[in-house]
Image 1 (spheres, rainbow, N blue to C red):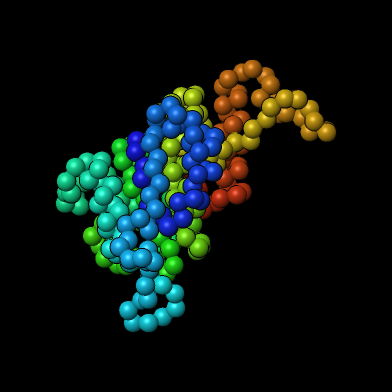
Image 2 (cartoon, one colour):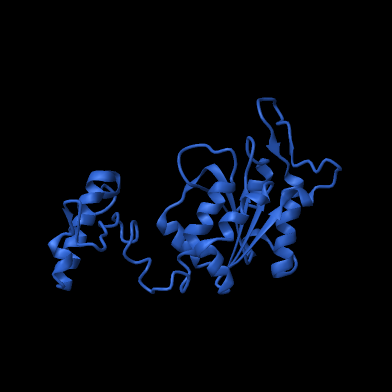
Length: 238
């Protein structure tokens, strides 16, 4: 998989994409992540990426010209001459507060693609012509507003890359976790078997696989009912 990120703060990404699982995924050639400074695609001496909104109002709006130049250059380098929007070989994603909320199912779908281009929005947002002509979808990481799209882009990259086969090492590493099957993850324990008066449940120490599986499922359902009852309303308990 290839992931290109367009941002006005490229320095924010190095500590994240250059550490831990993301670093290993790149070293293992599971994913290629490239960060692009949007200001490199401007034409004026001040490297301007924003301007005042038509109609007035507070804040600034990101200009269309540098964004178009950036994503078209990325696409041309990776896939050749520009194609119509519906025939692209890459998925253009705008990180924006008004986008579709990111879910585990969403991350799994994006994981199946070969090339993602993420645009980190800023200020009061991007010129609407960027959405109309370039963007395939808009993604949000929650119902709140951040100062920019850089942190959401990092979250999206992490949630997608960890799902790429071979990245986490164990084949089942992503199967039994929160949201994988519609439930929150069950409680986890490790050694010692007793700590400060708190013991590991007997069901996990018995060595009986069916009993362990049943305990985990019941705990996952109970935790979901308590913490995220909204998830239960969307499915049938089985």
